Image (cartoon, rainbow, N blue to C red):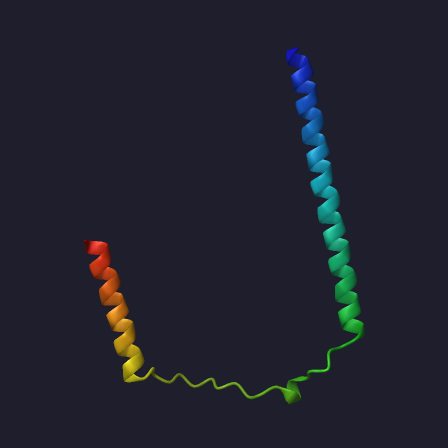
Amino acid sequence: MTQDFFAVGLELAALGMGTVFAFLTLLVLVTKLMSGVVRRFPGSVSAEHLPPVNLSRSQPSGSVLAAIGAAVRRYRDDRAS
């Protein structure tokens, strides 16, 4: 009886691992296929058409800093009690 349960457990484990292996293999193949399709047909958006990105490190406004400070203070007060 115990060997029966053990055999069923091994069979179930092998079936589960086989299913996961098959799914992951299929996922890798589909991902590679999609990657190849995307490389062949580039999108309509190119770098020339993208808006410029502002990389300057500006400071937040005073009201934003006050709101952040109030939120931190409230959080700390709530955690202390």
